[in-house]
Image: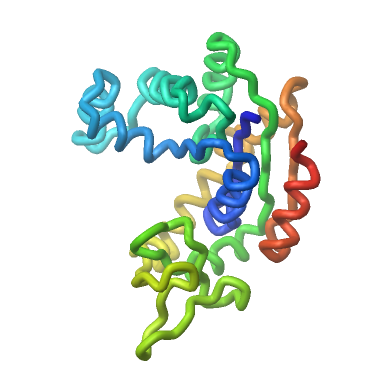
Amino acid sequence: MNILIFGPNGSGKGTQGAIIQKKYHVAHVESGGIFRQNIKGGTDLGMKAKEYIDRGELVPDSITIPMILDKLKENACSEGWLLDGFPRNVAQAEALDKALKEAKLKLDYVIEIKLDRQIAKERIMGRRLCVNDNNHPNHIAFDAIKPVEKDGKLVCRVCGGELNTRADDQDEAAIDKRHDIYYNDTTGTTAAVNYFKALSGPKFISVDGSKSIDEVSQALLSELN
């Protein structure tokens, strides 16, 4: 089962991705992690990517997509994968679709978690990150995933680890900048979503991200088979 998942920052995409990964035993493939793996491993593509990153420039798709394909071909992905964090715009969507087909890697499902932009912003500002695992969901506004209190401070509800916040999660201008890219339906990530939605191959699944975690996961899992 090979899956591509989309959702704006704050939509619960990471939480739902973890649920899918656990149930179907697919590998979680995240674009940022691929960069770190290649740079740390000193691969040719990683070294090329590092040159752009060190200059503060975006890594071109001609480097990013081959890194993603290499990852998807690893033994760890032989039972399936969940690709998260790429593509971010319609040009990348077109390039990824072409590359997957040329590599004979079938895309089975495309998931979109839809969420109102203002709600997404409020969710981002309330989330807390576990220092042990960022995929441990903690949020001060949702009872189901609210951190627990220990010795007068809030700690991770899953493992008891220390919690912190990303600086840009508390910066409304930074949030707006990220969302400007995602919600752009002409060239941005929403345009990429619509590109895959129009394809005849993979099954497209769209769910309402404003629902509870359980409701969203049930809606998703009912469509995956």
